[in-house]
Length: 175
Image (cartoon, rainbow, N blue to C red; front, top):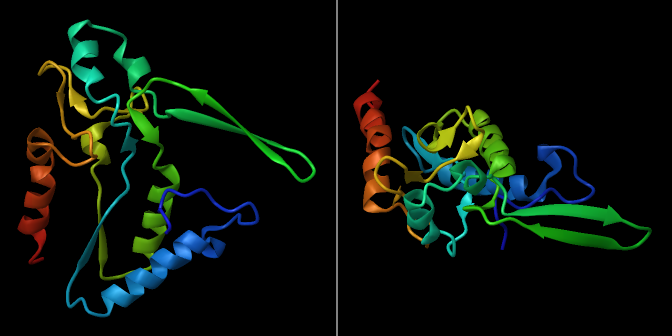
């Protein structure tokens, strides 16, 4: 099974040659031939580390440094390449995000650019802070109210936050 966030294989440098992207393209082409008007794809979001979600309320309540908590990587992977051996050193950080979505987002952008019937739905403007360069999936003003459940689903509050995205799609669909 593939994941859109899987890293590029060691011998791949371009998305065109990427087996994950090729599988995504194949699936898109299978689906889009059955679409009359528009096919919507949800752009990738970071995967939230479910064990840290309960910590949000405590960190907000204790007024801890939330910028450190919002750091975009849970694991920093350093690969050391030897002749026939790859050693992986994992440095643990206690943050909310477990998987960075950058590569998956690049794959989706390229996929949508190749498909005239496709449109990308993106939650990044709602959950990403450009000034700090971090994702924030909770509301500090509302005492740490989370937008996602530990299972990486939108909570009721998260659904309310993204409602305007879908309202905009519905309002503009006839155009």
